[in-house]
Image (cartoon, rainbow over all chains, first blue to last red; front, side, top):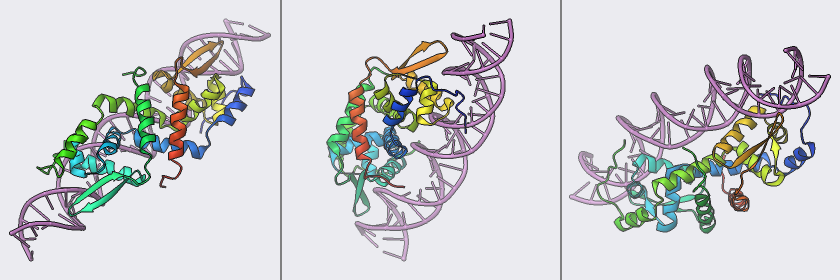
Length: 124
Length: 124
DNA sequence: GCGATAGTCGTACGTTCGTGCGAATATACG
DNA sequence: CGTATATTCGCACGAACGTACGACTATCGC
């Protein structure tokens, strides 16, 4: 653990306001986890696909996104663990779709906006 | 690299539609990078703070968020590298604020929405 | 100039995460 | 029952990331 070395705030009022405006630890963690989940390219592309295609099996998703079945399976497991997608079994095939009550428009809207934001604003 | 083992798509039409609906590699990468940047709790809390406080120095941000100066400095460097914040020097003190043209309302809106989403939908 | 303070830099460390491989499970078909 | 297919699991590896620590730079006040 690191010490904060300066004894006096430069802007005590500002620190107070900042402290009050800050997210709670729980909020930051929840939101951070969700964003981390969304930050993976494979998972991201899958969600966008599942918004328009409704239902696809692991192998077909792998084909559509040109990734390995392992990648597909792993990504879907993560999304499922977070409750964002759900499964249906049909013989040997397991179909994935967005979970009931998934906020499609909302997420879609937000991500498209963020996509726009990321347009000019990047390095590397 | 992994082979996709099944020779025939289960739902060829679906795969086609999925492929067409998918984000481009570039889009997925840009959006993923942005989301990864936002997925860190420290950076996240900083942005929320800077939306309401306008300008704060490294040490005061550390105080307000109860983190080390190293953490504060590191997080701000990342955000600066991404062009999300900018600096102003005042003597020994370096003030950080959201970058000019930062889409405050948009980002604020999106993140608040995602925060809401993350409310019910989590494990662990 | 000297000492103190704000912030950054270099580096090493520990952790987390996505990947790939081979084996295992589950189901269908003959 | 035996083989083939779809998916998952266990595991190990490597890469990326955030943190802490000490050294370093820059600026202020005396």
